[in-house]
Image (tube, rainbow, N blue to C red; front, side):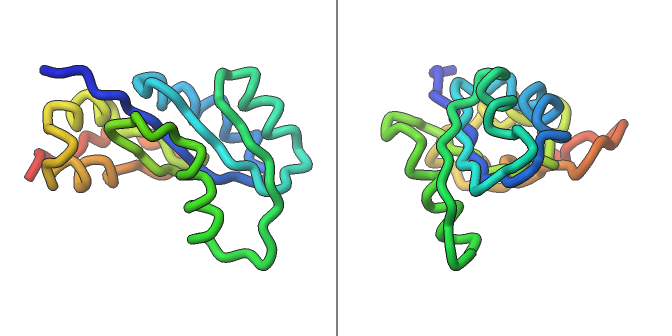
Length: 130
């Protein structure tokens, strides 16, 4: 199987309480990028200490699509697979490994990479690929 460069990107604001768990679940990614939109709880500093590349920018007025598009712009052009998550989400067990069995141009990967789990949930396995 070829090696694909997998990058995770996210937006956040005041999500320090989720940072460590989120970063631990993103460990299979080659790089992680976050756009912080004005945290006051130390989220950017904590994420940087955990190995995340963090940019800070206030976006007003606040449309999610603008913020997510700005976060995507942080990802290098040579990324093969880009995964957008929220900091209160974690990858389901082995999700990244399972998704990488498909080529990036394969439509099935888009479905697999959207199968995230909210919060800490035990025993949830991702559905079989399409």
